Length: 155
Image (cartoon, rainbow, N blue to C red):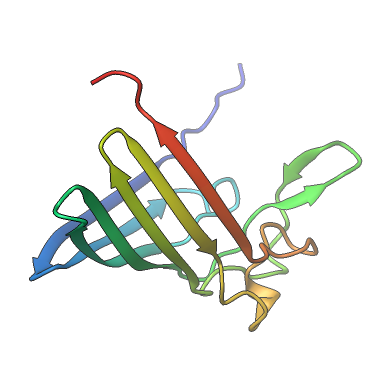
């Protein structure tokens, strides 16, 4: 009879939202532990900070937000990608990833039932890109500009 071992991932998180006048802050930290670093290659610490300014405009009819989002993780040996089998595999610890900040700029507005956003994702791409790879040897996440509209038909 063959027995299978158990593996686990444990995470602890702390988050706080706070405000100073019209400036809003969202902070989150996650500490992760795994019983098997080869099976579950995850960063030990993941953090995110969102800072935005929010104010009603046009006689308090429209909400306006402009802000910055910052996220990062500690170094880890993530999965490698094997295109021949179209799957992610264990890489064996040759390429370290993580500890690369990702910065996003955003503008959000809300007018009654319509939400409009403009987001410039990863605007700091191009600086020390060797650690921003999704998988070792594959192109890093590049800059992108996103625009969207959401319209709620019912309350």
